[in-house]
Image (cartoon, rainbow, N blue to C red; front, side, top):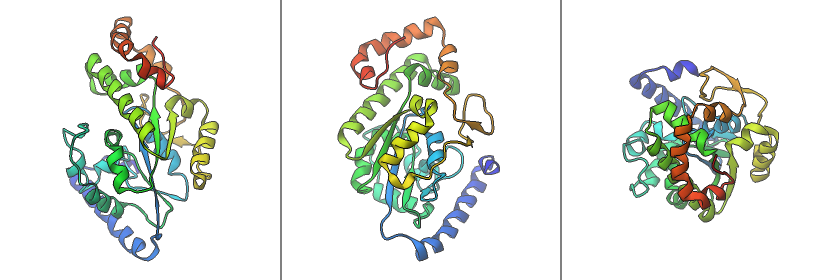
Length: 269
């Protein structure tokens, strides 16, 4: 699918149109009477693309977007609603019934599990839950220093802004964990350091994912920009790229949120 990722906007739209047309007939004939929705709730740079690839190895799963970052917010129709400058505003009003209708065009509804993972979903998951009734959620988190450094490296984000964003992400996730009914909490570190154990946790949470395969090389974007790569914990490399001054700045902000950081079993350097 790499050649698809390089297409311009117009050609990409045509590609997705072709996908939706092929699925229309299949869904008409073979769609299950009831599907199960699975949302990966994850801040940016926490392994959600990798986890999406892993879960998509199951024959029982359909992801609504199988290219690029694999996010439903980038699909035609949904993009105009979801992928705007205010996408991280938790008060943003979204017509989720309309979004659901759009996503249904890109899901293969002959599959049991319909998968979605757009990062801004974490700040409005409780609204999503009202429309996608009975959904299950995997909440991902990652070491603060590694996530913050990834943000700085990728977008040249100011370190204080990147740190405050991280804090906001954890607050959203804490709320999701405490208020949503069907939640599995999984850290990037647990997934990368012990994929076998992570798989067991996932399949206990959703037994029909028992056929997922973690023993592969994946296309998920990473700091080495390799086309494919086995599961690997990149935290050490990320954190080592931070200077002492940067760590001090991060600590000055995280120290005000120690209870929140401890909630996710992280600590200050």
